[in-house]
Image 1 (cartoon, rainbow, N blue to C red):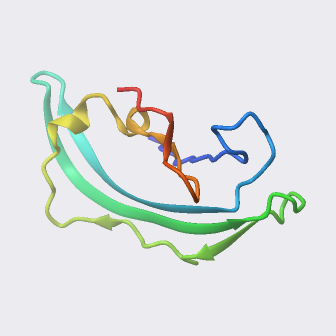
Image 2: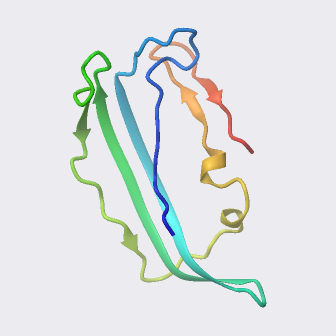
Length: 125
């Protein structure tokens, strides 16, 4: 299995008619729990073999007017926490096995410095 985390952000204001780049920073703090499972195909029983937890945090300063390769600077953290393999498996919650999955449940919000937040892209479910 190859599961690549590939987030993206927009350069412009997503609730504007302008395409002018106005992105100045990115703050991200996400936690994940993943299970390595075995499924008995005869009985459809799911058995958790390992539970892995990790967290991804970052703060990036963005300079859209600079040239490619110089537009972003990682401020913190300089190194990520390493994933943790739990010594005791956590049970898999039933909602982790059916939709919406993490990708379908994501929401894109625009939070301006002044004014109310706007839902740009609602969750699929």
